[in-house]
Amino acid sequence: MAQVKHELVVLGGGPAGYVAAIRAAQLGMDVACIDENERFGGTCLRVGCIPSKALLESSHLYEEATHRFTEHGIKVAGVELDLDGLMARKDKIVDTLTGGIDLLFKKRGVKPYRGRGRFLDARTLKVDGDESTTIEADRVLICTGSRPARLGGVEEDNDRIGNSTTALSFPDVPGRLVVIGGGYIGMELGSVWNRLGSEVIVLEAFDRILPGIDLEVGTLAHRAFKKQGIEIRTETFVESAQRDGEKCVVKVKNADPIVCDRVLLATGRTPVTDELGLESINLGTDKRGFLAVNDDFETSVEGVYACGDCIGGAMLAHKAMEEGIVCIERMAGMKSHINYDVIPAIVYTHPEIATVGASEEQLRESGTEYKKGICPYGANGRARTLGEVEGRVKILADATTDRVLGVHIIGARAGDMIAEAAAAMEFGASSEDIARTCHAHPTLAETVHEAALDVEKRAIHTV
Image (cartoon, rainbow, N blue to C red):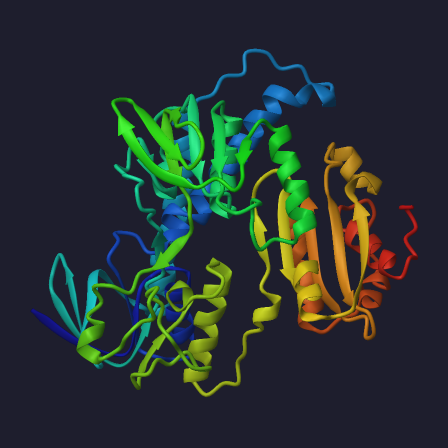
């Protein structure tokens, strides 16, 4: 068994882990990164954010070609879906980006270890891979991420009944697909297969889809998805899902069973903190499996740190990346910080949904007095030329100081436009600051400008 030593060992090669490892190497640390998968990148890059967005883009183009090109005076005949080609494009993107991490590690001097890593003690880890290796480390950073949550009664076989990973590689378009869970993942993957021809039924236990999103924006999204042909059943409790030959049967409370071709379970994610040997270092988790850390991301065991999905909070890749960087920089004595109030979130459906900061419901609940400005996409020239008039921008600002407290966008390219709002909020901008900033014409970003003007009822292009 090989024995080696590193100054820092990062356990997990996902967004938090590989970013932390690269930043540590930039700061001169001797760093290694362990991941049990053949390719680094974690869930996000291998079986999450990137492949799902590739499918969303391809399915959107297919839907455009079959239903909307004629609006632009483009007549297309004989459009056919090549599902194998669509999947091949997705896989190529994943291969390229995961290979890019290997290159970055090589250029930065990060030592990769492929295998299952677990603690022997607080300063020693064992990697079980093609070759067993014992690694001694001055510090260890746990970045083991999360996995799809399971649901009692749902008998997953990773074929007819599976999770988000399964739904990225269906071999054919399901005639009827039942999605259990109306959150980000369920609505995104439900949208993919709906566009490709599936009859999609979303079952959500809450009284609304996308819980946590600003209610007004969530309501608009619900209407848009129904218009696209997605059936949404809220306040619906799933009792079981079982395979029956080549079909599946989903039983719900107080309703008839649903027979379908495939089932996608999308009820959230749980931390991956089991089988890490945490008991050997007397490091416990809470009842849900999350690790507790202090402001420097250090656990109760000196020299052992954690960040990303395994410590809870918003399970977002960019949040995990930011935590990885801040953790490493604090190890190096830098006064780095992360502002959890300004972490944007995006749902990559069509229309896209993007949000940063507080929702109206949160502001009301906290007793914060606020004012708001709205700009509908239909008032924007660029939206008209794109044929994307569905959507709006909403800016919430403090009633007294005018400081921007939240921005919520539903509409084309919302995910790109939210960056301006996040930057403005990070620097404590007021709605007046955004309103006084000249925005290029014609652009979708002008909707943000117009919404900022509307906070003080000075909007030019809306009434």
